[in-house]
Length: 109
Image 1 (tube, one colour):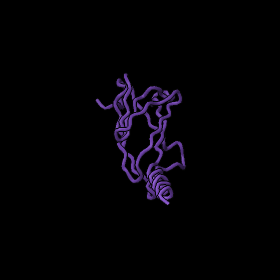
Image 2 (cartoon, helix red, strand yellow):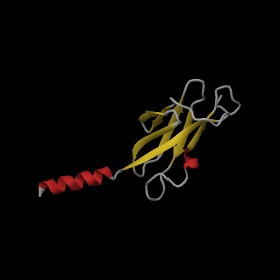
Image 3 (cartoon, rainbow, N blue to C red):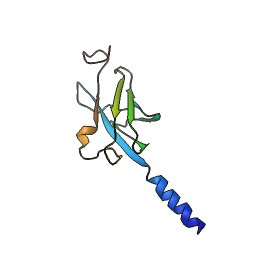
Image 4 (tube, helix red, strand yellow):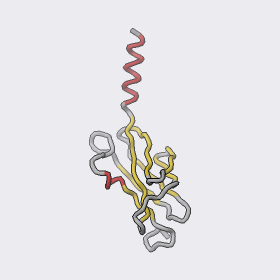
């Protein structure tokens, strides 16, 4: 009987996370940028050779995403979950984040 309650608790606790993911691209070249430090609400990860990153976050939690890489301007992105408390997986194009080179006219000077 006790093991049933433990199993139910584990199942319910595993449902409280949502996978947040995206791709980081160079604005000028439209190519993926690897080794970008990505901080999502204190969860730190790094992009791979395809510019891909992911992190498990709590459901219904707004995100503050900080992207940082040498020679690029610091980028801060705010993201809210949808009405189900998850991050939309409908269109991968919406998961692209572009970084500007520090010398770009678009960077935060």
